[in-house]
Every structure is written in structure tokens, then in C-alpha cells.
Length: 457
Image (cartoon, rainbow, N blue to C red):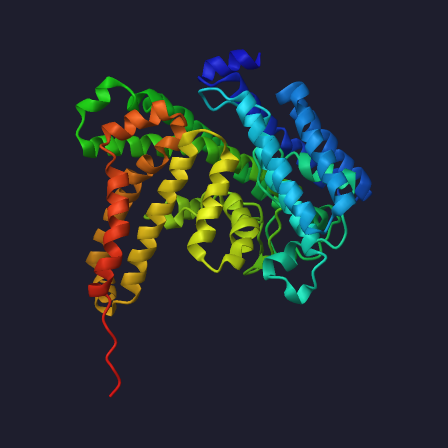
């Protein structure tokens, strides 16, 4: 039946199974909120573990054993060496190695929905857990604000780790959330803080409906702008500008499949109450696990705005557990390179991932250089603040973002070099040449565009 429905709507059976599995989280979360919320904590842990585990078996069959191995290894390592540097290093090495071997063994020419998809979510969750337990052994005055928020004084039980791992709203595609958040939620600690207006159940279902809307937009859009459009011989009939526009629209539509899953999963978490994020202007905020900020993402004009709006939880995770942990290097650029290299490796072996994160690095560098120059030039700031100039700048930057979003993320969508390299060749490597040139030229121009301070007499 599922296969027939998938064919009717033009989707793969595995994709439809994934969406249905995420949607199953809504009745489960509603049952929890309505009937199980005040049950004993042990029963609640068991409910989340069992429901998420069953969904995993339905999707991946016997391959669910890989996540069970991860749960057991994390628990044993914490019992043996929890709170030590050794446990953190072991967690990093074991989970990343297991994931990368999994990628290698199951690799195909396409992006497939298989056990490695939820496992990559699990890897970050378990690495973070070992970090948080280690932070719990450090005096609080030595912890950063993030560490104080997430640290754990005691090692979680096996059932707690299993429930945290298989939570129905976060097992398959995320979002990431810490063990500290999960324990606060399941122990009903958010209840006394949620004093504002705004019902989580209603807001969660609205978020889910938005996710389904994005599913529809993706299905319709991809039928008009399929992957084959950028690899066909007819693509060369267009001018370079039109080719960049086509690639930009194609990638924009391709990203909607990720956004739709994130929104639906977030809705499940909201209905359960997991996502409470304080009270603002008298309203309860339920965006504690948001993976996409739609109001920012849909109005982006430069790539720097993607970091706080797209794949937000992964970006926050990378900042807290990789970038900031590299502070001892004393070099922000080195920390950024290590973080991007880690994220590329975490995604898999395909060359497209590494090229995409290289693109992110060179694009963000020139944007930061440009912003720095503008911030130091009052005349340029005054010119850009004029209303006609602001409107023109917004339009130009919007075009810039759409055009080069496609160029930057083409390798991410096509993955294999034999697929993305011909597209880059047909675009004359224009983005790579442009951004590398800007990275070289802007620091030189900065000397002339940044006014020199007058020497004190």
C-alpha cells in the first residue's frame, strides 16, 4: 500500500515511510502530553524508548542493531571512565569511526535513506553527552555559559540514554537536544516556568502543517525543476547568468526536503513540551529545538545569515562542542577550519560534502571582510543607509544569494564528483574564481577603504 501511494505522488517508498514515521510522533506526543505526563519518570523513559525503537525497526529492520550498539557502548564508557578526557576522546573516535565505516559499507551513487541517516544524528547526541558529563566534573566557575546550561553532575542510566536516543521526535532526522534538556522535560521542570500564553500542542501542530506545506512545495517544484535539468545537454543552451539562476532555483527547491522534515520533527517535539525556551513578552516560547528559522531563511541576502537560520541545531552543536573547544589554539580561523572539516567528515565520504564546506569557508571569509570594511568606513555606511541605495542593495544581494546558493551547494546535492564537476565546468567555475579572488583582493582594498586615524598632536 505504501509503495502504491508513493508511486501515485511521485515519491520513493523509503521517503514516504520516513515522512509517515515522523508524523507518527504527533499522536505519540499527544498521548504523552494528555495522559502520561504525570506518570513515573521510569515509565516515561520506557514509553519514549519503546515507541522510537519500534519506528526505527519499521524503517530499518535488523539494522536498528547499530543504534543499540551505540547506546550500550556510550553507557559502558560512561560507567568506566565517565567525566574524564579519555571518555570524550573515546566517544569521538568510536562513534565517528563507526559512522564512517557505515557510510563506506552502505555507499551508493545516490543519497539513500538507510540506518546511517539516524545514526549520524545519534553520533552528535552521544558525543555531546560525554562532553556534558565531563563538564559536570569541572567547578562551575570555570564553565562557560553553554557548559553551565548543559553539564551533568551524574552519568545517566542505560534507560535514560536509550530514551534520549530513540525519542520519537528526534531519532530519525533530529533535532539535536541535550540530555540536560531531555531530563528537565521528562521530570516536568518546564511546567513551573511556562507561565505565559501559548499552547504547545496547538503551536506544534501548526509547525507540522508548515512542514507538510514545504513537502508539497518540494514535490511540485522538483517536478518542474528536477535534478536532470542541470545535467542535461540542453543546459548549455542558456547563458551563464541563466544557468546560475536555474541552478539557484533548483538547489533552493532541493533544500525544501530537508526543511520539511525538520519542521515536522520540530512539531512533534513541541507537542510533547520538550522545546520550552522561556517566556518572552508574556508568551511561552517553544522554539528550543528549532532547526530552521523560516522568517530569517526566506529573507536571506547573504550566506552569513544561513548559519543562524538553516540547520541551526547542527550549527549550534558544532559551535559548542568543536569550535569553542578549539579555543586553546588561539586562532579563530584554525578553529573554523577544524569545525568545517569535522562537519564535512560527519556528513560522509562523498567529495561533494568537502567542496560544499570549502565553499562555505571562502564565501563567509569574503563576506566578513566586506562587513568589517563597511563597519570602519562612516562615509560608506552613510551612503548605504540611504533608502534608494538600501532598496537597490537588497535586490542585488538577493540576486547574489540565489545565484550563488546554487553554485555553493550543487556538490552537496549531487555528491559524486562525476556529477557535480560537469555542472561546475558548465558554470565555468565562476563562483570559485569569484570568491577566491574576493578573498585575495578585499584585504588589499581594505587599506584604501578604511580611513586612517588622525595622529594626535
